[in-house]
Image (cartoon, protein in one colour):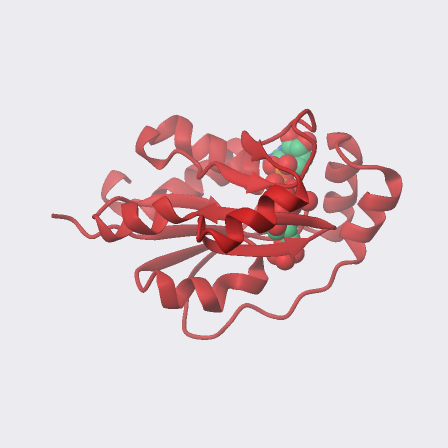
Length: 181
Ligand SMILES: Nc1ncnc2c1ncn2[C@@H]1O[C@H](COP(=O)(O)OP(=O)(O)O)[C@@H](O)[C@H]1O
Ligand SMILES: O=P(O)(O)OC[C@H]1O[C@H](OP(=O)(O)OP(=O)(O)O)[C@H](O)[C@@H]1O
């Protein structure tokens, strides 16, 4: 059985995590992005996710529904425990994670590849305002968010997404699946 792994897609708000994951999944359908549980309004748009209230989220944490969960942007995010079972069963999964949970994720998922997407601050600002999912205040908070450098010792593929999305997706695919190149 081929070993499964977790592909953790990380990077600042607006950098294109969800867009790049959608492009990867379009080319490699087995890499469907993990459907996250988020305390975000269900009609917010963007990624396909399960919207829950904060009380429901807390209940799910207590019930062990998540293999990873964290808070960010005033929201709660959960990765279903099934994802860990899938990877342990030999399936590769791809998820949008916070950079702040990578150390924890590396313990749970020894075979983890981090796809770190970057872009200039100017591009991030343009992307977030163009996305129109957040208020001006929320956009400002995202742009001001500072995080620690990525943990040492991880397998990290870093890609810039300042240019054409198709180029970034092609680079990601060849980096993730060199056998396809
Ligand atoms: N390479 C790109 N060129 C132009 N627009 C992009 C590119 N990548 C993403 N976008 C757009 O930028 C916005 C943020 O992308 P998104 O995937 O939501 O980022 P993230 O998930 O990292 O916050 C979206 O409106 C998306 O359509
Ligand atoms: O700790 P960080 O690495 O800064 O990440 C903060 C949050 O941003 C991303 O979520 P989401 O995709 O919902 O937000 P975004 O679209 O604004 O990036 C990511 O999944 C984290 O939940």
